[in-house]
Length: 400
Image (tube, rainbow, N blue to C red):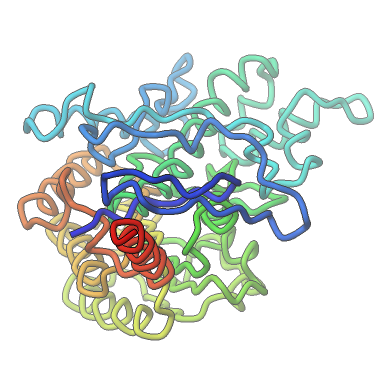
């Protein structure tokens, strides 16, 4: 049984190692425009002792109580980790520490003009950056903050979560699954943010994999947040390598009709949809999506704003329903042998952190995630072909 280590694209010769787990050849491939991918700190080797769970204390947003002006629990990510520690599932030294995405990382997807709008930029006597960030975060007082504080207290946490999603993408290929305890900024596209989403982490994770990891050329996004994921939909509008399934409340933000054209499997829900109907639709359509798309990676946007009582989601799913939903998606990924990356996305009640932790614990108890789980569980034809070629090469060497 071999562990399918992800092969990063970027020059290098086939290494001769006695370990079957280290025999994959490095193969260079550019970004499609003749240029090699830029140097990044996000694709680094992770010790095998670590869980493929990505987090940083820098995820959490706390600044003079301003974060309380938005219904989003800006500290929920740390709470999830604390619950998992209390249950003895993880410890600090077993978590993959997220790194902040640099401007060069962000430029893989974002336009420089958009990134400049998030900085200190004066336009006709007004501080344009403050308006843009205040609009994206939906916290009006941000309009009056100096840019260095906005960068440090608001945007850096979001850039770190974005880096975490990119890192978790490679981990999912390496290990078969990965969870970024943050991320899921599905309203942000290459040139526009919104809905508390300043960086397009889902698009970035997929583009990084396409550019850098051999054998990854198709992705499926399963977006189960209560809101339509219009950001990644706009980014992948004409990209046939990316299949999008989106299940959302049809009556709430963003109602982006143009972006809906990118959805291959659209499931629009009514106000107050409950567990039975919801879970039946999720299970049916996840299975259908994977049968249609046969991807190399699943990006699962696991928003908990579907929870009954959520002030923005408008659905009525129970905590147990959320746990069952996540279980259904991971079971489908396992049965199809496809690596899966989960991000936590929206959720606007204090109890969502406990529910996310309970769901992760349930996945572990059922054996759907495990620290030792090898990517041999994941079906990736190109990588499997590379393994067979490498085995043949070793066999030839042994016969010489």
